[in-house]
Structures are given as structure tokens and as C-alpha cells.
Length: 210
Image 1 (tube, one colour):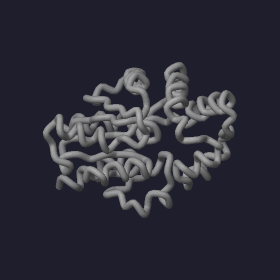
Image 2: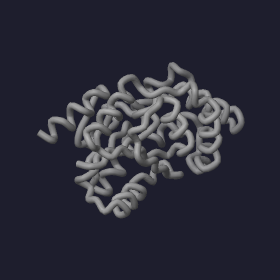
Image 3: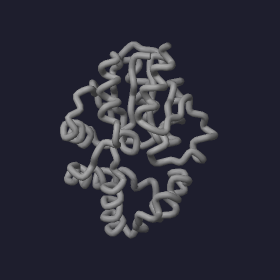
């Protein structure tokens, strides 16, 4: 395994509060339902489509709404932090010789700003997809450009859509439990690895190489 490819929001970055405020501003403009902090635990058990219905959000409006949300994130990037232990994990993986990539539907500038803010230098590439369901195409393109096979990669993410994208292109996938989707939601998709803390990422990779 040569490349570790991370999702950003919910996997590396604890951006829930900022995303909630961004959503509520957009919801006010477009007459969607607002999100309250007490709603979040229940949302973990809903699919993206079920969440959209709950908040009266038509999915076809994603191209209009996402840029507004990402602009808000950029303006409030100082309020977003990496999850505890993530910086140390990224640095350790870099020292172990892995190439660390971030693949996200967030804006690349937001990602780079947060990495700079958190003084993370271990990330070698940031890949972005404007489509929230387009990660499989980006992974396929990346592997072709780097001339690597799926077995040389590991994707680390927190959502069902991450797992499904990886399955399409046969990239092994690790699910992290501290993100958006619950275990009940992802269980049937059978990720290759499940971790409950950032340090377990290192432990799992160390066991694999022994």
C-alpha cells in the first residue's frame, strides 16, 4: 500500500458547527428547513436522500447551494479544526513513507487553508470533485495518472457514498466512526476496515504490513 487517500469533512476536519451555520443561512434564503444541533444524532442514521427530504431540499439545487456553503466555510475557516489526533496521524503516515492525498467535494482552497492553519505539511495532493457522488471517477483518474493499481491505495472516509465510490473502482476503504454516517448505515456496505479512533488508522496499517 502506497497511497492513503482521505476524505476531508467528517474524517479529518471537524466542520459540523460551521457547516450547520452555513446551511441555516442558505435555508433561510431558499426556504429549506433549518438544522438544529439536536437534529444531528438522528441524521447519522439517514441516507443523503432521506436527509434532503427531511429538510425539504431538492437535490438538483446542489450546484447552487454548495458554492455558498463553501464560501461561508472559507470565511470561517479559523473556526474549523482537525479532529484530535489527526495531525499526529498524518505526520506519522508521512514518516512511514505513505503518500497522503485528500479527496473531497469541498473547495480545494478551504482544504489548503485549514492544512496551513493547522501546520500540516504531510499532504502531497488535494483532489476535489464538484459532484458529491463523483469520487469514483476522480479515484480512477488519479490511479491512471499515478500508474497505480487499486491495491496500492487505501481510502479513508466516513460516509456510505465513500464506500460505494471505492467499491466501484476496487479501492480498499476504511470507515471512521467519528464522522457523518452511523455504523448502522454503513454496515451493509461492508467497508474493508473500521476504526473508532485516529490512532487505530496507524494500528491497522501497521498490522497489515507485518
